Structures are given as C-alpha cells and as structure tokens.
Image (cartoon, helix red, strand yellow):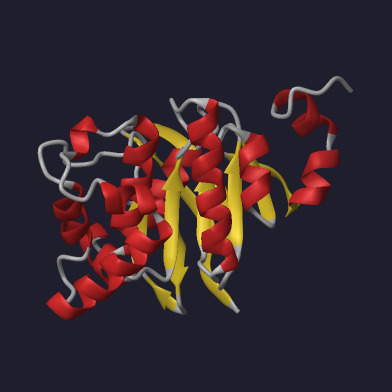
Length: 237
C-alpha cells in the first residue's frame, strides 16, 4: 500500500528551480533512499515532503490525503516526521528532555511508553538520559535525533544525511539502527550521500541529478548501474 506519493513536484529557492517535475512513491513498511551528488535536489525534495518548502507545482499525497499545503508542524504532529541534516538536538537540554520534546503532543502515558521503547532501541541513550545533549558524541547525537523523531510515533520518517560528519564506527552504528527500524516495520525515506550505507538500509532507491530522477528501482539493480558504481560506490567500471 502506497503511504507517500509525490507527483510532478517543482520547487526551488527564490527564482532558482531546484526540482523539475519529480515523482516518488513509498509503500508502507518500505525504506527508500534518495542518492545523488551535492545540488541534485535531494534535500529540497525531502524538505518539500516535510512541508518546510512550499512546492511551486505538483502534489504531495500522504496516506491518501493531499498535504501539499499543510503546514510543516501539522505534518509532523500527524506523523510525517523529519530528522534534519546536522541533527539539530537541543544542546543545553538533557537526553530525556530532548525526547520529551519529540513527543510534546502525546499524553504523558504515551511519552513514557515510547521513551521506554526508544531507550530499549538505543541503550546508549538510556545510559546518558540525564546528560546534556551537547556533550554527546556526533554518533550519539544522531541516535538522539532519530529517537526524538520516533517519540512522535511517526508513520513515515524522513532522514536527511544521517551519516554526515560521523566516524566510520558511528556510521556503522547508525546504519544498523536504521536496519533495525526497517525490520520492525518502519517506513523510511533516506537522503544519503553514503550509498554503501544507504543500500544496506533501503529496498528501493532513486538517483537524482540536477533536480530530476534519472534512475529508480530496487537497490540491487542500482548497484549494477555503471553511473552509480562509478560515482557513488567508488568502483571502476
């Protein structure tokens, strides 16, 4: 069942068009990755889906409803949640308080139940629940950003470059967490320049180039494409 659909999306900044009629579908329980070079339009697409950018043309349909004009905060409250590039944790607040803010619109009982699930998924966060978020390592902050998003009990999680700036060990840890979310049935849309990590998480992918989808399909097929192998997997073809 399709839970998220983008049709003919055109978007940009000021007078500069960054997306030129992009189409995208995501099924419930599926992990889909968006790969491409800097400036390909990946983050613009994700922000358009999240409601942070108002598309010039086209539609975003989520769970059968046209949400193209719906405000970002309402999309997040309803379950279309973005984990932003750069993590954006509240550095001066504790881990526990960051998580509470992620579920601000939920009841106290729901927050307690979901935070227990998050701590079970991220033992490191449980150990550091009273620690200020700004004192965590980059990898731990990324786990916290993901955990904060999960506090909203989302139906779709949008992740923008979760491996950016992390050491290889932290990248591996974050990747395994995302794989576990997929195993648990979460629906993910993953923007990632690290194609090796993205292909471990996702079942299907889209290659963007200069604001257009130039290739899409199962990740096993993307791996065999000469463009992907040369530009994103570092292989000689």
